[in-house]
Image (cartoon, rainbow, N blue to C red):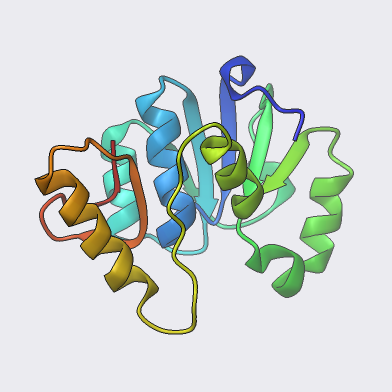
Length: 156
């Protein structure tokens, strides 16, 4: 990818309440970026992101994207479940990337442990995180659940 996240100041997340995409939103907030987003419904995750400074609107549509956004990050469900909206995003003139694409950019120059499979990914990731944290290794962790000790899906 030819995206320098250091240059991005204002990001809009579509599906910001999703467990994985919300971790990237948390990371961007920690980096001092202006985080905006939308989701179909409010949740504990969207409430927490609002408390951290994200500006979140309920609903879905191109009209919810604020002016001056540098980047749109979308949930991979959007192209499948709302292809008309996805087409509008593609024609918006704003750079758009999926959550997995951004995850690749965020981890590009880092030693990465990725867990894949059908079942147990979240549990195994949480176990690896706990081991590394307890060993004093200071990992950054993105996990598909809220970690009990941190009440977050992001540990940095």
